[in-house]
Image (cartoon, one colour):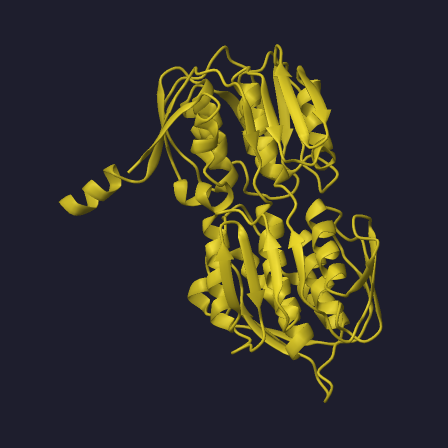
Length: 431
């Protein structure tokens, strides 16, 4: 039987109260990319010289990666959104399980640790429960580079045989264009002996960002951003000063926030080319889009139903499927949204239905019949992007919505409600 203290804790879970119907106007500046920052931080393990990274967002996931790097022996200094990492004396090659368990990006340590030290032990990672995200492609690539890899009791152990402890270049063909595996092999192979080619590589902007950083550190990488990447191994890497790209998913989320509230809004500090697929879908459903330099202006009109299928970049990103689906609940007509990347990424559908959305779910396809309006309700975000979708739904719903799941939201968005409130929304965080 639950105690009074347990019941009180449940009632007072951290949540946002979102007042619906407030128009937005003004400009939102985009933070640095979460998915880039986490990987670039692990790249600091590849050299004993200092790596300065600018434009790092203030997120709980970033704090988690800082804790992991500190546990490995990396010296870290921070001033606002600038971090300096120096892995001069690595204390060990196995990050603690309790730190790795909640952060999937922790697995990226395996590439640089193996490349620099010749051995690594990394527990299998955690993160959002949106479906199976196996590391088989990572392991296959590391084995091709000459590593001996085993998985026992939830821990991946990898080592390089021989006296040199140096990986060897190889030709690697991925079965699918995995972002994580591409990043792992990029970092593992930059210090390998010889040439490595990655076929069917992921093409996301975050891959290009990592390659650009590694090249500034002295690596020799060509082809990043395309399906084939070539890496000429070098003897050592050096320090550098590098600025992380803006977060295209955060930018897309705020553009959708403007569309769902039928508000004109400007997004700044963004690279519009990283959002081509999203911008096209916003145009398709009735929004006018203006791009100028590092700014995007969205002017919504009547929102019409469209079909969306998530795909690897340059296709429509899976990370914006939930927010866009929230938008389509109030579109005119019937939309079809198909999730092709993760098999368990429709957890927001039931919550949107609680707010009056008309959605039929058939496997990983949602058939969305637009309704005139949503109604406020208490809802829970089950992962990072679905929590953001719940907030966006609350912005347009009639009444005051209560959104739980802030532990997910704070992993990927810097001052989410503060940025929205700066352009007209009324959102309050409790407690």
